[in-house]
Length: 196
Image (cartoon, rainbow, N blue to C red; front, side, top):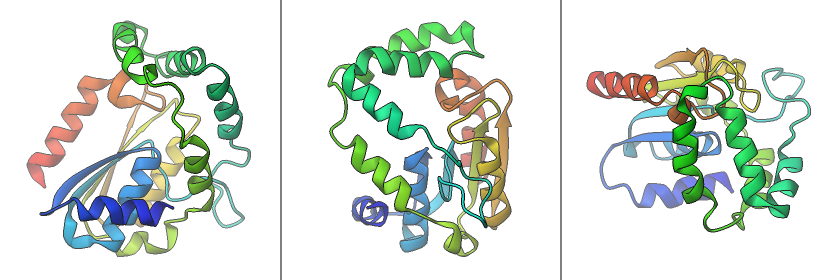
């Protein structure tokens, strides 16, 4: 449950913090900012979303998400399919392939995470849209122009509904801009922290 995860993280925060959330982690950060605003100094959400699946009043979501298929593949051969997933993220940043080779062993060393299906179920049931206008923490939104998992339109939706947000779309990034365009990502985050 995304709200329960947000509450559990909030218990570990003793003073207003900068929260950086990627993908589902960004959704947890949104819930935390809504439920515990006193714990949040600012947000950085990258490749994240208010709601994952499309709805009649939310065309920004995905109509036919492929995450369930990915989970089946990860459970069959986590190393092989995680490597393929990461290679897709680096497709437009081939000069950064040494980063992929460096991070892959740490990502796969424990095998497929046991909570993947639970995370997918949490994504399907969570919807932060109603409370976005009530989140007043400054928010940095970083999305990849080549991201098909959380396309830039999801960031544009967040930008329209979060009162204090700024949106940056990195042209040659996919779903993991902090890996594939690490320098640009770090610069955006550092500039944001310095001014907030």
